[in-house]
Image 1: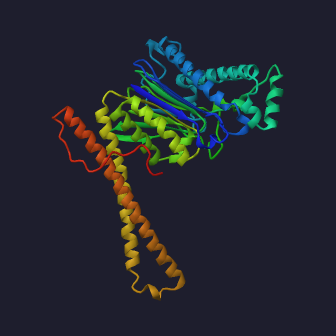
Image 2 (image 1 turned 90 degrees about the horizontal axis):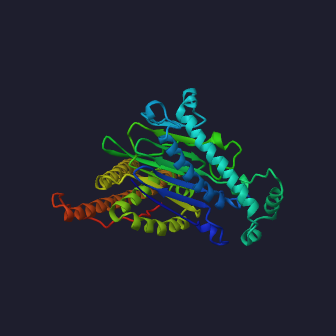
Image 3 (image 1 turned 30 degrees about the vertical axis):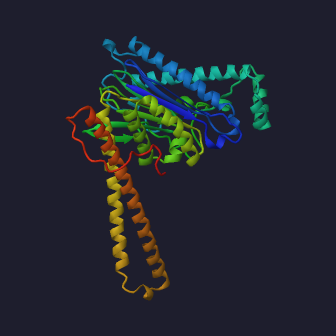
Length: 418
């Protein structure tokens, strides 16, 4: 296993030097791998959410490590030293769809203990920080007086709470040699890549919370945060090829489907071709560009991936891209044929009434757009095939048994047209 992580200040935060409110973390070893992304809320009321995200990341990392250790030490195990995840097929949970059986399971109760521990430690940490750390010069200059006064008044209370000031989301992925699990509170996306019948499948394994919509999200600062956690786990020996976690700045830039998946695929391919160190540098350079071109928000990416057979993984990644692009191209070509038939069926355009003329003109414009789209998809396919060619030819230099193929394009970039 191996990992990569990076985060950056959003383009919209640079004008007033607003701190980066995202935080990302990843670690990997034979015993435990994890990735964590926390996203501080952007509103004025949450003016210390960058600290909240940082503290949540640190606390979650330690809590997960302790949780996995306790699992091994039988604190949460079943009979014969087996973990509560042992033998479990893929299981997903959200409060909205939970069954009685799920609620009563040892796995559910164990994970709820973990979430409760994270929440309580986070609340204690932010309370201490709030009481020990005076308003900074930036806060005095940029935070509305209403929220500053609210914060200062709260500091005078013995039972003060500061969740709103430090509010943030939390997402994590954890993998051991025996099981994996992931959990999420808030927005952002967790993207899994796994191999099914020798084909790559990209999906979002953690159930989504419909309350996370536009600028609304569930959060660690919610009074019922414990009930808002969603999670999934598996303990039957099946593991993802890779798991990517990204803050909402990523899916606000790339959307919720193929474009987002393709970004992570391209990143994974760069890791395979150039190694983690160079990929991390590329990611560090690229995230601010994506923010500027896309959502203008802070950006975070953290990933854990299987590095045991990267060559095979590379070809599965490119096969997935080609399959998706070819499917899109077929649909566009069908549209082109339908529009051509519609246009050719009009013998005398000048004889059409006004409404028919408008429809005829729209069909002509739609045909041109469809042709342009087909050209773009074809160009992307050529780039993907070129990447595959160059990689195969590089492997040929190392191992002559691998047959070379002719190159037809340059390598693609991590940023593609959004």
